[in-house]
Amino acid sequence: MTDEEIKNLGPLASLVGTWEGDSGIDSAPAKDLGNMETPYREHLVFDPLSPVENHQQKLFGLRYRRTAWPIGFEDPFHEELGYWLWDPKALQVMRCFMIPRGVTVIAGGNASADSKILEMEATLGSQTFGICSNPFLDKNFQTVTYTLKVTKHDENSFSYEEDTQLKIHGLPDIFHHTDKNTLKRMN
Image (cartoon, rainbow, N blue to C red):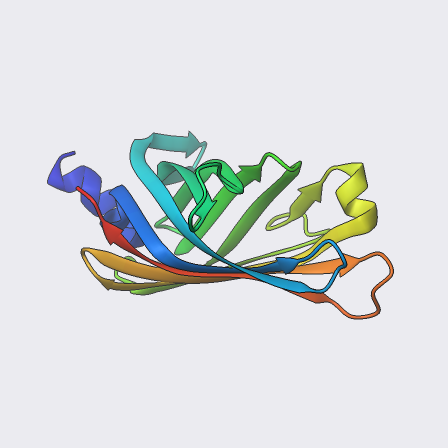
């Protein structure tokens, strides 16, 4: 990548590359719908993509893939594919991703080109930053809100906290399915 291409990525520039972390904690619904915590490790790859033009809008971004494994296991328990996008004119950062459970999310938030903290949110029913699920999940484990906070510590380390708020059939309160980890650059 040229210096200009990196500069165009704004707050996403420092994410380019391969990352790994092994201090993750996943707090998810157990089979009995109680809370189950799973320590995990993960691998993320962020690759720059060509600028995307939507008439007057020009987006810069990263293609990414994420895989997570419970500590001590070889088979992953989570995968996702998607894009992180930067809109320099609107000063917005976006994360668009799909999970093979049958969920897609477009989350977004405001940021500056040099932001060290990125915060994004998606809400069920939103026409812009929203959530879409397959019929089974929508009925039984409906995602109503998704939030993400990424904190960039330096060029070789960042952490994140995400909260997927679920309305679970049969439970009176919202369940907070949370994930957090710190990742280090591998290349």
